[in-house]
Image (cartoon, rainbow, N blue to C red; front, side):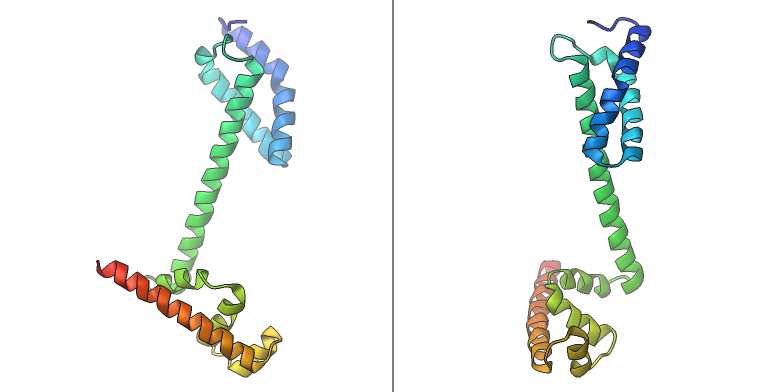
Length: 165
C-alpha cells in the first residue's frame, strides 16, 4: 500500500507501534530506552515517509530498519561519549602533557603489572606492602615491576620517537 496521506501513515504507525516496541525491548533489553527509540523511529518515519517504497519492502521492514539504524547510531554515540569522558577524566586527574601519555602507556599493561606500578609510583607503597596488597611474594612484585617498567619504557620511547617525526 502506497502511503499517500498523513492519515494513512498515522494509521500504519499506530497499528505497528506495539510490534516496534516489542522488537526494541528485545534489542535494547531496556524498556525505557526501547520506548525512546520507538518514539524516535516514529518521528523518523514521519519525516521520511515520502521515501518509503512499498515495492522494495513491507512497511514493518522499513520501520524496523530505521529503528535498528537509530539504535546502532545511539550505541556508537554512547561509546564515543564514554571514551571522551574517560580521556577528559584522565586529563583532569593527571594534568596535561606527559601525565596523559603515561596513562595511555599504562593502559597497555596487564592488570597484574599495572597495579604494582600504580601502587608504587602514584601512592608510594613499598614492594613488601604491594606484595601484601596483591597477595603475592615480594619477588613476584619485583618481577612484575621490572616487566612493567620495561614495557612502559618501550611504549614511552616509541611515543617520543613518533612525536619527534
